[in-house]
Length: 131
Image 1 (cartoon, one colour):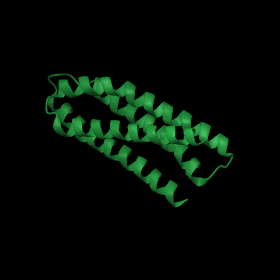
Image 2 (cartoon, one colour; image 1 turned 45 degrees about the vertical axis):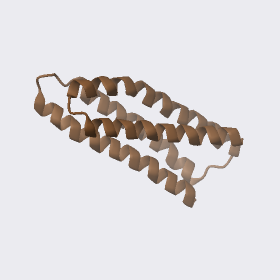
Image 3 (tube, helix red, strand yellow; image 1 turned 120 degrees about the vertical axis):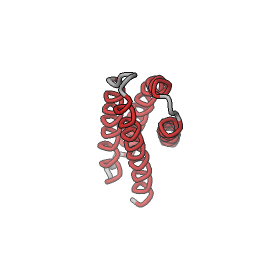
Image 4 (cartoon, one colour; image 1 turned 120 degrees about the horizontal axis):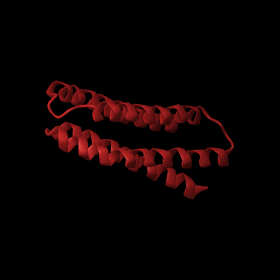
């Protein structure tokens, strides 16, 4: 049981690291095409890591046989992170190279998305420590 919990926790740390890297990339990279290529590479890794978090979390929850408020919050949080990242990707992929205004709007949108994602992970962590 402990190894499943450890795997779940380390995967969450890796997931958070991916979010922080994406946020850093959006904050620092000024060339949109370079940013789009980088995020296009990171998106499958993001979703794979989220899937691993969901899978290991399911194993831990069923093994513990206790449905707490924390588990009930983790499920919609994982789904929310999946959906919001898909929305970010869909918004990014339709932006043309010559559409500077859409690129600037995307930078603001992506920063908001990654800030929300990081806040969700941190708030779930805090809730899991309280309950």
